[in-house]
Image 1 (cartoon, rainbow over the protein chains, first blue to last red):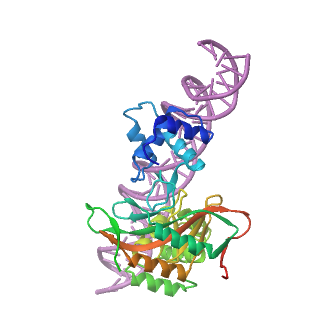
Image 2: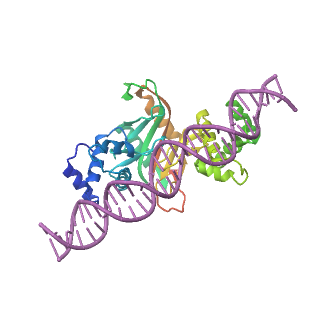
Image 3: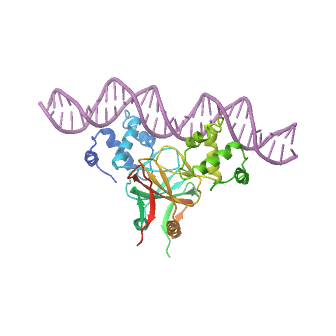
Length: 154
Length: 154
DNA sequence: TTCCTAGTTAAGAATCATTCTTATCTGAGT
DNA sequence: ACTCAGATAAGAATGATTCTTAACTAGGAA
């Protein structure tokens, strides 16, 4: 989900049967802009406050919930204490650093295919799979440098 | 981790450099007995209270933390609001039902091998992988029945 | 355009999960 | 049995989230 105009956001809200309020528009915008950083409700709230001094934290919480229910956003599971959101609703995985609490996205079509194939060969009974994701847990070596994942040539 | 005697528990506590207190023993026992249900601190506390009327919730939290640090237990990530623990410290995955908040364990050597192979062909830079797990998210179809996973014959 | 109303919001209280503080207690080595 | 570092109970403090309620607004109807 990248760089939608306000009208496009307005439209996708209406499509989900939601009133296109100012609050919903700016929250959705903010999560999209913070794409990759997996913000908490508080993060969004702080980001919006300067330009929207009357917005309330409760509204941010409620709005994020609503978006999660309609599938416009995803909740990211993490070991930390607070809920975090992701504007990328595609299947992808996360690298979680227990030292810095960072969550790094990690998309790999090959891995996705591998898992789709695997689960098509398994039968999960009485359960409707909505999505899957892989979590790598561990620690950054150099807390100030970035984490990156690359293919090793065989 | 199954059906350890109190003396065996006592021993493994000492091996981890922890004093073998009554509280630690009963908490560890309870998590092991609740194996598969991924209890919260509150669950453990309620279970222990009748037989241990003076135990405090704070102690349960602290004890569970301590066990997680020493690797005797694992924290399970979930989308829900509270931390949950698992006495199974082996690599395994979880099926999470967003309707009932159930977490079902799911162990599959084949899947594990698949992932180990996959990640050995990737290079994750500046990150020390401590573990990985797969999460299937979705909904139970019949909330009263169990979820099961079986191999489909080709 | 104006009116109406169901749905939405702001504000703050309430609740829930977790951590912290401190005085007291206890396991285990001597 | 004595000692004391480490552990515990109790409850206060904190942090995250949800709830409540009165006021507000988007968007359809008149």
